[in-house]
Amino acid sequence: MPFRWTFIIAAICGVTGILVTYYFVPDMTGVDLAEEDARFMEYLESNGWEGAVGEDENVTLIEGTGPGPVISTVTVQDSK
Image (cartoon, rainbow, N blue to C red; front, side, top):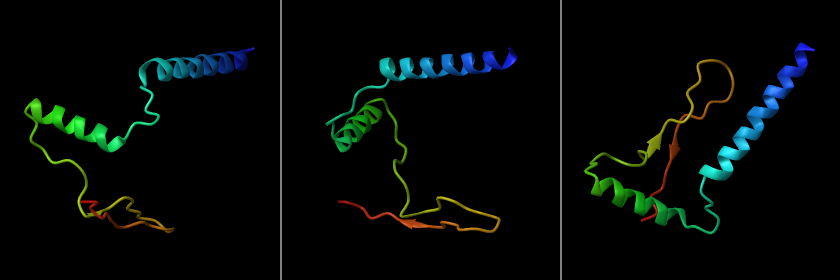
């Protein structure tokens, strides 16, 4: 009997996640994300934000201390 509540709670969390996603995440199908980025930058600038946006040319993504594959740097090419 105690294991049944585990699955009921998991199902409630799943349904809650679906409802939150459906009602609060906007549909971005067919929307150019570059235009959304430009609109967001305009919003930030109009509200006085003066920080840097984006990543450096060489970005460390994953640093490992143990054995195994490590991705150390990635070169990002500017599209301008």
